[in-house]
Length: 634
Ligand code: UCC
Image (tube, rainbow, N blue to C red; front, top):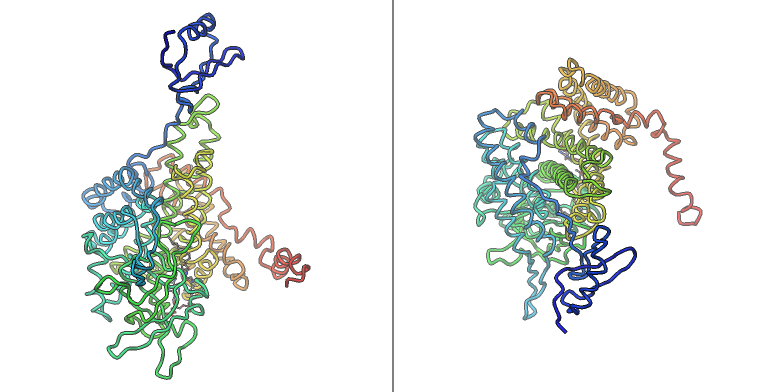
């Protein structure tokens, strides 16, 4: 009997008859085949050909989502930069670089980022002869991210200042394009930027520091480029740094110090240098408690021979996400360090680093949102369900459009913080702008981090089950986003930081915030489509000022809602202003309108519901603890 190889993967189904040809390479008889064909020939039009026999996995494969040039696909970024950077500088220096980088991000860097997610860092604690070495091993893709960061000038652009105050915007635009694809290399970049800012600011008092480190931190040569850590958190906690820091610094005869302590979360442990806080031990062997006892120290992580500077890596942290980043518990056991602040001025001195890392955090949040929304947008053109591609379903498009509004708002807020930082960098920021920057930094960090959590989560949902599958790279985005509201200050800690910024200026910063908003939305009143949004924003700003004046006694309890109100109202103003100044593009107008339909002032809404009264505080406590108390656990 003549035999032949089955050519098609066919499960033939006809009116309930199923003939399964099980094996891809199966041979069957010509006769049997002919019979089957004959049987079905007559009813070919009714024949349903289900493709499961040969390959066993079917023939339909969902086309994967893909991203184009990440810069060119971002209308908000482009139009914001065009608005703020003089045209000749923009066209000659900024746009071509961002264009190239936008291409590099979605063609080369995306895969490297994925590799960082797979090849996680680990520590070799001992060499084969039992010697403790604590060698941190990172993957080639992580190292490549280091080199790319240097080549692309991700730090250097901001400090070489080739284009003056616009350098910071240029740099942060790159950070924004890079962060969510960088395999979390954005973390060491944030710390390194903060370190460069500290070193630059301390140049007069500590010229040796600038000479030693600045060139490395801002180098474009991969072999010369240093990254920095920021080791602040200890076992007693990351928020209450003043009371949580136990590390002591013992003065040495040569003017240096030896640090002894335990750093509980030290991110990017492969850094070359770090800044850290410790308490100087006085001649009486005592240290000073609280903030007044904390000083800032500069540490080089490795000795000249590559061994660690009396540092033991106890373990790498087992985190929910950001596993790509080697975050470690470190024992400092006589680590050589150099004091770079006056005694007791540690927190104030490291605050420069906090400002930078919080702004980077906001860009990382905006970046994660942008990546998810652009990917979901592309996917909606490739994925069909119920007879049509998803982009044809207005419910689906409405869901993504709501996310797009969030991303645009977050992008404008973070870019505005970067613009002000650029002016502060070069010393042209007015006093008002400095106050505004001080206020916008915690606001941008806290608000965009929360947006990122919800936008990334909703974005993943738009992929259906695929959004839950690891090797699509999508779930990692959600896990990694969860760190954004936590590190560099939680939402509540930052809400209190907002209060600190307001108190320090005796409320002037709030007035500046208000006046700035009014100025931004003023001209929108003449555009019919925007007048309502502009009015809402202006009224909200005034209500908030009024609230702060009349209810200063509840500001601590209202701190979170207050910070949200400042953020939402400010973003509303930015969206309205952007719509006007970008030439009244209908999508910009629509984004501003949609944003301003939100409750811009939850603090006022919740005040009217008496959320901040002492009665509510008692009820909140009862709600949470009554049962716990009843169980005898309180
Ligand atoms: O713990 C962390 C890791 C979490 C897990 C992450 C996993 C790793 C994965 C990473 C992969 C990507 S991260 C660290 C989180 N911790 C923080 O960010 C600190 C949060 N806490 C704060 O921000 C607090 O508000 C403190 C530490 C700043 C408060 O300290 P004090 O000592 O109570 O502060 P004072 O007394 O209010 O301020 C001391 C000085 C003042 O200056 P003078 O004396 O001149 O008035 C303040 O004005 O510092 C100044 N200052 C600031 N200046 C305080 N905060 C600021 C600021 N934000 N900007 C400017």
